[in-house]
Amino acid sequence: MRLSRYFLPVLKETPADAQIVSHRLMLRAGLIRQHTAGIYNWLPLGYRVLRKIEQIVREEQDRSGAVEILMPTVQSADLWRESGRYEDYGKEMLRIVDRHERDMLYGPTHEEVVTDLFRSIARSYKDLPRNLYQIQWKFRDEVRPRFGVMRGREFLMKDAYSFDLDEAGARRAYNKMFVAYLNTFARLGVKAIPMRAATGPIGGNLSHEFLILAETGESGVFVHKGVLDKTVPADVDFDGDLQPIVDDWTSLYAATDEMHEEGAGAELGDDLVSARGIEVGHIFYFGTKYSKPMGCTVAGPDGAPVDVHMGSYGIGVSRLVGAIIEACHDEAGIVWPEEVAPFKVGLINLKSGAAETDAVCEDLYAKLEKAGVDVLYDDRADERAGAKFATMDLIGLPWQVIVGPKGVAAGVAELKNRATGERVELSFDAILARLAG
Image 1 (cartoon, rainbow, N blue to C red):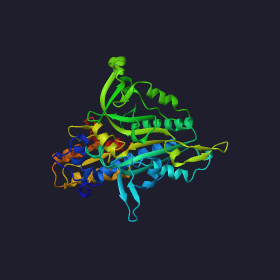
Image 2: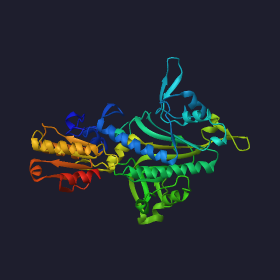
Image 3: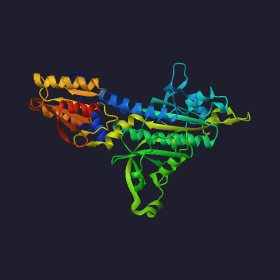
Image 4: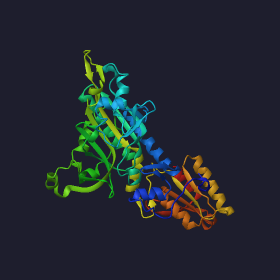
């Protein structure tokens, strides 16, 4: 993509109402623009990141055996009355009345809808187990939307729902999602730590939050320092027994402030780390909380009706954009992990309009694109070198290729690693080999 033709409205000044790093950088780097309180337009650069995160989440859900569906954003209030949550949910729910005076709502979550869907189809224990997921926009009318996409009112979320015959089966489903989440966040280039958490309005008695440690995190967290060194297992067999992996990750103390045990500090001493964290995922096992009142039953092996055991599993896809920035930035701007970067390479022409540098840049641009490398080519003729450098550092692409007249004369260009700041001069072929490898 040529920057001269792209829609990238970067800002030189920091917006006064942006309180945290991710909000400031998302506005300055042209990822989002506010539409109204807590609701944002996603601009091209931000939307590319959002789609990359979404795709990684999707691939890991599919690998775990979950099956993708898409449910409506607008829901019938009658379903929520069946489950008993309609009055309990509070003012965060956006309630709507249609032209026929029927009570509707904009979905803050989808437990009721998916339970209704499943009960209309499943008849026998042979229809179990199942895990259905979607990646869908949701709305929660936050009383004080703030921090950009970190606590907005409209947000993109992956929500999955498991259906099993009994608690043992439901816990196997829970373990699959636990491990799938470890893999997902590792692929996104961040470490999210599973911690014991309160179940809140979703309900149930088993729950873990996945939090990325960051100074600006909204939650206080307490973790054994050994948790920080744990690694994600490779080549997981999702049809095998995943309990040992879950046990390994939960064997050391890790809890949100809501679940923190005061005595743990004295017991663990210097091994206990107190920090801040950003919630990016939450998993729940809640048994028959929804299936029982909504009549979601199947015929068991003996023919008797059985209330289906359920769990739900969320990942904040749009929130992850902000959370990754909170964990991956420096004074100059964003430092994207390569897996989610909007482009892999920023190609900078230091003298646009000069025949020699234009020819080299055009050749590199064409060859990188042919090799399947995402490139943002700064071909602007009306910007000085300093402004081009500042823009590339701000938007945080993993690699920068800098082409100037002196380098062209010597047959080299400069390759910069955005994360480390390391710069090396390489031949054009060597740069192509490094980036397309």
